[in-house]
Amino acid sequence: MKKLKIAVLPGDGIGPEIIEQGLKITMAICKKFDYELSYEYGIVGACAIDAVGEPYPKKTHDLCMDSDAVLFGAIGDPKYDNNPSAKVRPEQGLLKMRKDLGLYANIRPVTTFQSLIHKSPLRADLVDGADFMCIRELTGGMYFGRPQGRSEDGNTAYDTCVYTREEVERILHLAYKYAAKRNKKVTIVDKANVLATSRLWRQIGQEIAPQYPDIETEFMFVDNAAMRIIQWPKSFDVLVTENLFGDILTDEASVITGSLGMLPSASIGIHTSVFEPIHGSYPQAAGKNIANPLATILSAALMFEYAFGMMNEGALIREAVAASMEAGIVTEDIANNGKAYSTTEVGEWIVNYIVNK
Ligand code: IPM
Ligand code: MN
Image (cartoon, rainbow, N blue to C red; front, side):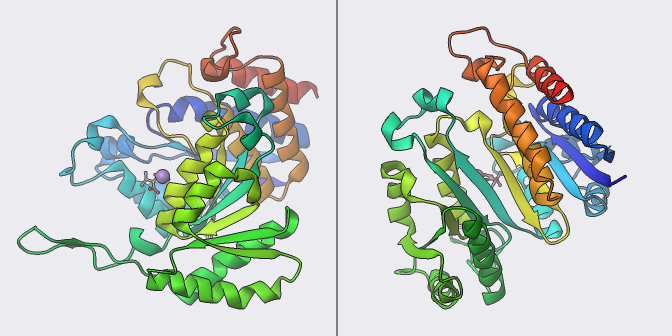
C-alpha cells in the first residue's frame, strides 16, 4: 500500500476551519484509492508566536522536512497589521518557511467558474474562458536581498534586489515545463528597461527560449502586464515573474475571475512542497463556520497532482467541487440568492460525493 505523509499547518484566523475540510477530503481520497495516510499538525504564524514566541518554530520546520507535502491554511492576525514596531510578525514565519524549505516557485492557477463570472469586477466577456497560470519566484529578489535596513539616523531605508543565474534558469525552465502541458505560451514579466536584475531575467529568457521551439515566448514589462491582466486576461497562458512583481500581479490576477475564495496555490520546493488557498486568514470570519473551504479543498487536489503525481485523485476532487457548486451546496460568499451552507456542511457534502462515487 502506498504511504503518504503530510504535515498539516492550519495557521491563523479561518485557517483551522478550512484546513479541517481539506484534510477530511484528503482522508476520503486516501481511503477510496487505498493509500495509507499519516498526518501530523504543526503551528505557524500568530498562533505560533503566542505559543512559543516565534512564527515558524524549528519543530514545525522539522515536521515539514519529514513530510511528502504540506497542507497549509493561512497566517496573519490584525493585532500585528497596524503595529510596524512589532519585533516578531506572523509574516516572518511564512518567509522563513519559504526560504528554509526552498519553496522557489509559487504557482497560482487562475481559472473561471461559470457560476461566479457575474462576481468579476470585469465585464463577463473579458473573463469568460480566462485560464492562465502565474508562476512567481518565491525565494529571491527584494524579499530576501541583503543589505536591507535603515541608516543610523533612521531617515534613509534600503532594500536590495538580487537574482542569480541559477535562480532565474530554474524557474524559467519550470514555466516552460508547465506551458508544454498547457497552451504553449510563456510570458516573462520584468522591468528590464530599468532594473539590472530584470535585464538578467530577460537575457536568460532569450537564451532559454530557443530550447523550447514549440512554445511561444513573450517578454513584457510589469507595468504593461498589470494593464493586460485586466484588459485581455485571455491572452495569457503561463506568466512567470520575480518575487515582488509576482506578489502584486497574482493578487490582481486572482480577483478578476470573481472567485478569490476558490483559488488554490502550490509552492514547489526543493525539500517538500506546500499547498494553500490564496485567500488570507480572514479574521472577521474566524470561528463562525462560514468560511469558504473550496480553495483549500482545491489545494488538496493540487497536492495529489503536483506532490504525488496522482492525477485521477486530483480530478475527482475537482469534480466533487464542481458538483457541490452545481448543487448549490456552497458558503454564503458564493451563494446565488439560494441557501448558504456552513464550512463543515460543504466539506461533508464533498466527502460524501467522493465516498459514493
Ligand atoms: C503572499 C503574501 C505574503 C507575501 C506576505 C503575507 C508576506 O502577500 O503570499 O502573497 O508578500 O509574499
Ligand atoms: Mn501577496
